[in-house]
Image (tube, rainbow over all chains, first blue to last red; front, side, top):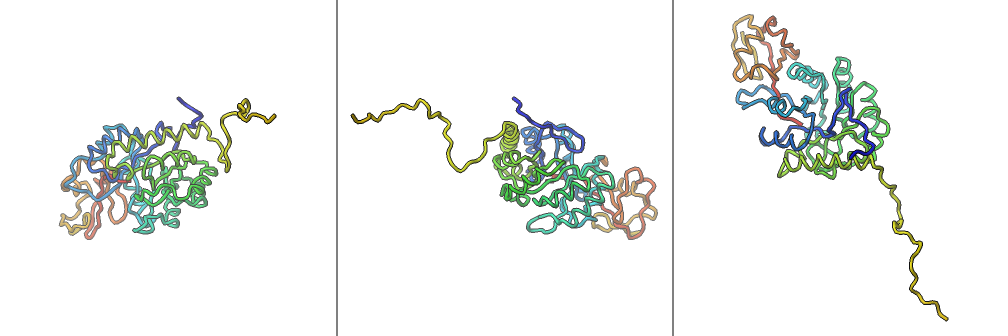
Length: 264
Length: 68
């Protein structure tokens, strides 16, 4: 079953799945592996941290076994300088030019630092990276990032891990209307309905980590959000009815029997 | 000479290369998914053999972990 659905292309790569899985927060590699299979995702984010001699098995083996591509992130970076070095390390470690760029401005909200983000994005684009910036839901900032040469823009719906859904759907839809690059909702999804909403608003894809990894049953939630993304895509292609303030009957009025007996 | 690797001081012979330092680190899983920065500059894998550490060098060795 396929309605009018535009292909999902990021950085010249066509993807079948519009769900990108963040691998953070899974209890262990085994749950991650099963959730990955249930999600149908083809792209997965990973992070870089100091070498841990006690680490048991590499996450890269899990992802390679599942046949998914790795997109490293710069999670935890607070300055453009740190994010740039982290991206360069990631390119070395994973042999990929793709980078999910996160430059955080505040520990409590984990909101992006717009100034540092723009500066890091500019440097990384110049250095040949395919830059996927995690950004606020500000359409003007999104356009700045796009014009710098980012391959997508990844606005938050609400803060990372908050599960608060999409707090400003109007901004997300303005972003989508004006962007020439894919808009991927990157944070705030709490459950399946949030993912449907993101796609119905016009987002090209959804990135989910906590909503899946921290669910009571991560594998079931991965499946649910996969279906949600598919449902949203079909619904968007099918073309929803306009919203109206008053009812519009779906049953014809014509032919309605009359039971009032006219008075003689 | 003394260098700092991932925040821990280490004594290494003078002229130790990045490659030699890495070979002496526990838990480098075949080097895959690992990258090195010395004093804030990334050292590409192709340069490990010819890059010598200096006294006081700050080395960061990173690996892939789960992350959003």
